[in-house]
Length: 343
Image 1 (tube, rainbow, N blue to C red):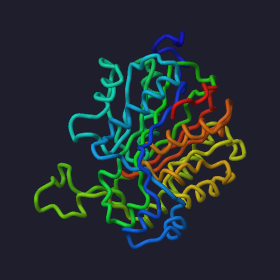
Image 2 (cartoon, one colour):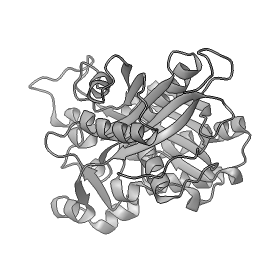
Image 3 (cartoon, rainbow, N blue to C red):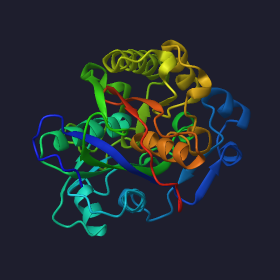
């Protein structure tokens, strides 16, 4: 535990553990092609995705979050967290939040726990929230989990979205430390534009449009305006990442690993090109798991750590975009973590 007292100047959040959980069921392009009017070539060309994971019947967001959170806690040495944040737009229930249940199942009853809802930018919003709680002395150790079960909100007959989204959970543990330590998170940039909320939404189910027997099928499911989202995602992530690079004092050539929200491969490459970061330095975890929403960035971090792509001291640039519209970025130097074991 850090010797820096709560509220002390220079107190920072330091990443000290990472973990992930993917459902067992693999949904291949071949399977989707057999039931939708599409082909493996069409899907791969437009998204870069070959497979995605789907939760089993009865497997909820909290189940994936607990598994990912436990792995991250174990990787961080097993010390309990005093705060649990769950970034998700597919909570187990509309009320209450999923985070308190996750905390209880992890043996963290009594910890502060709440959900963060910023769609695919949720993990970055949660990361900034965790950093603020630690800097203010409210928390000493935070478990942050990004978890989504998109198969519960995406219409399986919707070719546009069914080929993109997958289910999963990724988690990190943050402890109180110093801003000059490897793993210290900082240089955040966050933004939103609610005027474009209809670009990504589930129209019914909230107080604006409660579910009724007459609610159209389309309004019950996730919807996205593809061309507009593509343009906004590339523009917003690129601009946000540039702001973060400037704040960190980094040149694009300094970035060892660009971990952008795993939306689709064309977006990832466009952001990398726009920043001047070599494409080979861009995480491409989505190829085998799809777009996992708020889980995509921590899952990509977990995968890169497990495969050895992330080495201690590496400069890592995170950037994300999601419904709201929301976007955000963060920079950190990768810490020296224990080798990944059970994934």
